[in-house]
Length: 578
Ligand SMILES: Nc1ncnc2c1ncn2[C@@H]1O[C@H](COP(=O)(O)OP(=O)(O)OP(=O)(O)O)[C@@H](O)[C@H]1O
Image: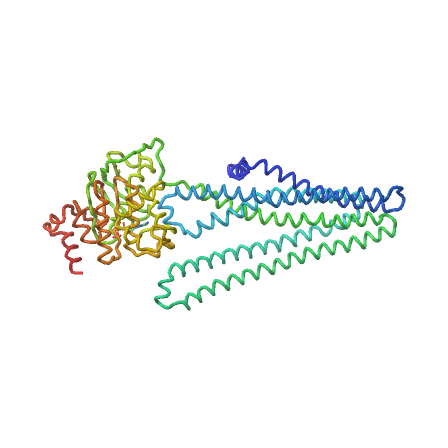
């Protein structure tokens, strides 16, 4: 069996009991639907013809039988609707969890190329389409087949000629239904895309709401939004038009078939080849015969959408994370913090130029090293290679003498703390965000970390202290406050190596001083790599490494480099003038 089909079916495995029960109910629904008209036929043909002695009693018995059938039908319908959908939702949850876990394994290189909105669509909309197929697919096929074949057998047993007349209509009806259903699907897909465009537009405007307001460009944004919003209505209009043709057409076909049956069946009655009970049963069975067509058309749509979603799901799942643990990766408990670059070269993509070329660098445990250099020269890139956010192209990076590609990713990253330039805070409270450094930290530990990060005082000034909500991405905090929270987070993590990518945007003097002080405390007894933009950070460094496009240009202490009167001295003098 094709491996994708196998994978598709594997999601049923934990719910086989529920699946079989669902199928059994689908079978019962079809059976009862077919037996009911036969009961009505029996009543009209045998009980109501006035020849039965105990007609009254028989009538009540049949009434009771039909009541039981209706009860079974109702219970089975409820089971299919409730448990069947629940099974679909649980399968959807399983697939979503698998994809989410996979997303977390994919590397930075992957995310550099992707749009977050599209990845979100795959994990939400696509899994929903699949859950519908998982649940309704088998059920629709079973019910449709059983009803269609069952109704056909009943009809042909009543009157062959009349059945053939009905079957003359069916191909036309099927073609008509598939045609309009296809158009409906195209419009449906279009309107889903339009919703995606509206989402993107809203996200864009709301993310940049401060810029919009500062330029008083609200009308411009409203126009852009109105454009997308109107395109959505247009696509919906097309969809509703096809839907109207589809639904009204199906009703018309059913009515046409019923009229044909009444006319031709009536003629049969006049010629005494058919009685009233047969004609009545025939008319009741027409609905049962036609309903599967509608169901199958619906199934075709579900199938198409579900399989497309499954293909997209598998495409994503089959992307191999390009940074993984090696087969015999070692666990590094607590590193000392010696970091060595051996002839390291790196480019982001095969088609790009090298960002770093033959970098060799030996940083001793506990050393405080600052990287300086022009913007875009590769300072951030160099540091992001140590936690293996990107795989180096050539050379080797060693942590305590061990090649980082031989260390398990988890233990490597556990030993490295990073304070990013663009601090990312999660929606939630101050406490939640600091705890991110150590998920089992106590309230005392959190407060201790905040104190070390010079964050405690400003936190206590907030109305809810540590329980204050910081808003989406920490919008309710200043740049310096966000940075101190991210430093507190690293204090809790307590790694032997830290990378501090200094914020380029200027902090006010007080904030800068607070950040600087907390950073100094953080660097105690740790290997510290600072991507420096400010003179104050550079001056404190035991070693300054000056990067240029051609690699490491100079290294030494501030005094040594000033004396050298080279690139660093130039940079320094330039900053002083500003
Ligand atoms: N994810 C990425 N994909 C492709 N190229 C990238 C990526 N990130 C950075 N670059 C490129 O790599 C080069 C080095 O960027 P990097 O951010 O390391 O420089 P930097 O020295 O830290 O700059 P700055 O001081 O402005 O932060 C730049 O030319 C940049 O355009």
